[in-house]
Image (cartoon, rainbow, N blue to C red; front, side, top):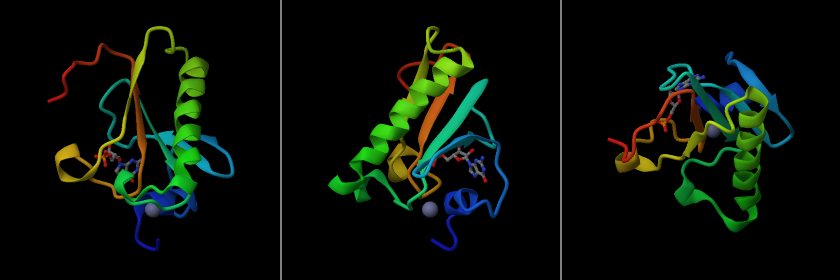
Amino acid sequence: MQDCIFCKIARKEIPAQIIFEDEQILAFRDIDPKAPQHILLIPKEHIATINDLVTEQSHLVGRMTLTAAQLAKQLGFANQGYRLVMNCNEHGGQTVFHIHLHLLAGRHLLWPPG
Ligand code: 5GP
Ligand code: ZN
Protein backbone atom coordinates (compact mmCIF):
# COMPACT_ATOMS: atom_id res chain seq x y z
CA MET A 1 0.00 0.00 0.00
CA GLN A 2 1.52 3.30 -1.15
CA ASP A 3 0.24 5.58 1.60
CA CYS A 4 0.17 3.24 4.59
CA ILE A 5 2.56 4.44 7.30
CA PHE A 6 3.33 0.92 8.57
CA CYS A 7 3.99 -0.33 5.01
CA LYS A 8 6.43 2.58 4.70
CA ILE A 9 8.14 1.52 7.94
CA ALA A 10 8.28 -2.08 6.66
CA ARG A 11 9.88 -0.84 3.40
CA LYS A 12 12.31 1.34 5.46
CA GLU A 13 11.02 4.47 3.74
CA ILE A 14 10.47 6.13 7.10
CA PRO A 15 12.56 5.44 10.19
CA ALA A 16 11.50 3.45 13.22
CA GLN A 17 13.27 1.86 16.17
CA ILE A 18 13.15 -1.68 14.83
CA ILE A 19 13.84 -4.38 17.41
CA PHE A 20 12.98 -7.54 15.47
CA GLU A 21 12.57 -8.47 11.83
CA ASP A 22 12.17 -11.61 9.77
CA GLU A 23 10.72 -12.26 6.30
CA GLN A 24 7.13 -11.81 7.47
CA ILE A 25 7.11 -9.82 10.72
CA LEU A 26 8.48 -6.51 11.97
CA ALA A 27 8.58 -5.23 15.56
CA PHE A 28 9.37 -1.61 16.39
CA ARG A 29 8.88 0.86 19.24
CA ASP A 30 5.69 2.92 19.29
CA ILE A 31 6.39 6.60 18.52
CA ASP A 32 4.07 7.70 21.35
CA PRO A 33 4.48 5.05 24.07
CA LYS A 34 1.53 4.40 26.41
CA ALA A 35 3.67 2.39 28.85
CA PRO A 36 7.41 2.22 29.68
CA GLN A 37 7.67 -0.57 27.10
CA HIS A 38 5.44 -0.18 24.04
CA ILE A 39 6.29 -2.22 20.97
CA LEU A 40 4.22 -2.74 17.81
CA LEU A 41 4.34 -6.00 15.88
CA ILE A 42 3.12 -5.97 12.29
CA PRO A 43 2.98 -8.33 9.34
CA LYS A 44 5.00 -6.91 6.43
CA GLU A 45 2.01 -7.73 4.25
CA HIS A 46 -0.66 -5.02 4.32
CA ILE A 47 -3.86 -6.13 6.07
CA ALA A 48 -6.08 -3.17 6.99
CA THR A 49 -8.01 -4.55 9.97
CA ILE A 50 -8.53 -7.85 11.75
CA ASN A 51 -11.88 -7.99 9.90
CA ASP A 52 -9.91 -8.35 6.67
CA LEU A 53 -7.78 -11.28 7.86
CA VAL A 54 -8.30 -14.46 5.83
CA THR A 55 -7.47 -18.04 6.81
CA GLU A 56 -4.31 -18.10 4.66
CA GLN A 57 -2.94 -15.15 6.69
CA SER A 58 -3.76 -16.50 10.16
CA HIS A 59 -0.19 -17.82 10.67
CA LEU A 60 0.98 -14.18 10.63
CA VAL A 61 -1.01 -13.41 13.78
CA GLY A 62 0.45 -16.52 15.42
CA ARG A 63 3.97 -15.38 14.55
CA MET A 64 3.25 -11.88 15.85
CA THR A 65 2.06 -13.35 19.16
CA LEU A 66 4.99 -15.74 19.50
CA THR A 67 7.44 -12.98 18.64
CA ALA A 68 5.86 -10.73 21.28
CA ALA A 69 6.37 -13.45 23.91
CA GLN A 70 9.99 -13.94 22.80
CA LEU A 71 10.66 -10.19 22.99
CA ALA A 72 9.07 -10.05 26.45
CA LYS A 73 11.54 -12.71 27.60
CA GLN A 74 14.51 -11.05 25.89
CA LEU A 75 13.64 -7.62 27.29
CA GLY A 76 13.15 -9.08 30.78
CA PHE A 77 9.49 -8.37 31.55
CA ALA A 78 7.90 -11.73 30.69
CA ASN A 79 7.58 -12.84 34.31
CA GLN A 80 6.26 -9.53 35.63
CA GLY A 81 3.79 -9.49 32.79
CA TYR A 82 2.54 -7.54 29.83
CA ARG A 83 -0.49 -6.94 27.67
CA LEU A 84 -1.14 -7.76 24.01
CA VAL A 85 -3.81 -5.67 22.27
CA MET A 86 -5.19 -5.42 18.74
CA ASN A 87 -7.59 -2.54 18.16
CA CYS A 88 -10.19 -2.83 15.40
CA ASN A 89 -12.01 0.08 13.75
CA GLU A 90 -13.67 3.04 15.46
CA HIS A 91 -14.93 1.53 18.70
CA GLY A 92 -11.72 -0.43 19.13
CA GLY A 93 -9.70 2.77 18.82
CA GLN A 94 -7.78 1.79 15.68
CA THR A 95 -5.96 4.77 14.14
CA VAL A 96 -3.49 3.05 11.78
CA PHE A 97 -5.19 0.76 9.27
CA HIS A 98 -2.49 -1.89 8.95
CA ILE A 99 -2.97 -4.55 11.62
CA HIS A 100 -0.63 -4.37 14.57
CA LEU A 101 -0.25 -6.07 17.91
CA HIS A 102 0.55 -3.72 20.79
CA LEU A 103 2.99 -5.17 23.35
CA LEU A 104 2.69 -3.06 26.51
CA ALA A 105 4.69 -3.53 29.70
CA GLY A 106 6.68 -1.90 32.46
CA ARG A 107 3.84 -0.78 34.70
CA HIS A 108 0.69 -2.22 36.24
CA LEU A 109 -1.88 -1.83 33.45
CA LEU A 110 -5.47 -1.08 34.39
CA TRP A 111 -8.41 -3.34 33.56
CA PRO A 112 -10.97 -2.80 32.13
CA PRO A 113 -9.55 -0.37 29.57
CA GLY A 114 -11.13 3.05 29.33
P1 5GP B 1 -3.89 2.03 17.06
O1 5GP B 1 -4.48 3.25 17.71
O2 5GP B 1 -4.20 1.99 15.57
O3 5GP B 1 -4.24 0.73 17.73
O4 5GP B 1 -2.34 2.16 17.24
C1 5GP B 1 -1.52 2.88 16.38
C2 5GP B 1 -0.21 3.13 17.11
O5 5GP B 1 0.76 3.50 16.15
C3 5GP B 1 -0.30 4.25 18.13
O6 5GP B 1 0.07 3.76 19.41
C4 5GP B 1 0.69 5.29 17.60
O7 5GP B 1 1.41 5.94 18.63
C5 5GP B 1 1.59 4.47 16.71
N1 5GP B 1 2.15 5.20 15.58
C6 5GP B 1 1.47 6.01 14.72
N2 5GP B 1 2.30 6.49 13.78
C7 5GP B 1 3.54 5.96 14.04
C8 5GP B 1 4.81 6.10 13.41
O8 5GP B 1 4.99 6.79 12.40
N3 5GP B 1 5.85 5.41 13.96
C9 5GP B 1 5.68 4.62 15.07
N4 5GP B 1 6.78 3.98 15.54
N5 5GP B 1 4.49 4.47 15.68
C10 5GP B 1 3.44 5.13 15.18
ZN1 ZN C 1 0.15 -1.19 5.31
